[in-house]
Image 1 (tube, one colour):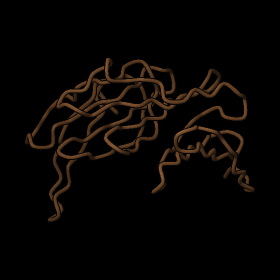
Image 2 (image 1 turned 180 degrees about the vertical axis):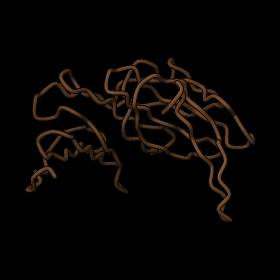
Image 3 (image 1 turned 90 degrees about the vertical axis):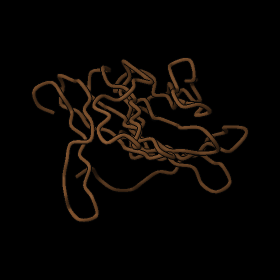
Image 4 (image 1 turned 30 degrees about the vertical axis):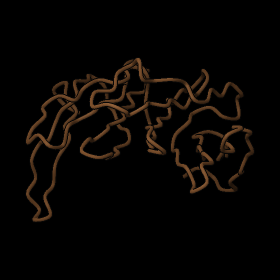
Amino acid sequence: SNSGYLKIYKITPGGAVSIFGTISTNSSCYGDLLIVGNYLYVGLYTGNSNGGLFQFDMTLNNPVVGQVIINNKDIMGLTYYNGALYASAFSYFASSSILKIILNHVNPSASDVTTYITETDVGAMGSWGICFNSTGDLYVSYFYNRLIRKYDHGTLNKSNISLNFDYP
């Protein structure tokens, strides 16, 4: 990020590089990218809860600025499952949450976003990566405590998978 914009680059199979789109931000930032259909979704983490989730129409040559779906939440991991986009809302000290965004129309907005899971225990701070397995169980990695948590499909009963390694 420089001069107030995060640049998203498009690289063709032949190696040509061009700016595909931008997101206005005054913070150092990073996040996840996910393509669903003709749309690129960009999760933005700023470290100060000023991030968000943005949608870019990939059928356009240069969409310039992405449509804001979620604002004022640091979005890290993204995954798609069964007609919905799921996003991990990272938090250092407060509860972490997994958000569910229904993608049943072209321009999803904040009204299409619901909280799927909220974690308030200290052992699950810092939700990061997320994915579903083939049976619909959700796995969430947590930045702190070397933890992956499994949420059973349908019930959302949770179990922990501890990882035995030190941080780099």
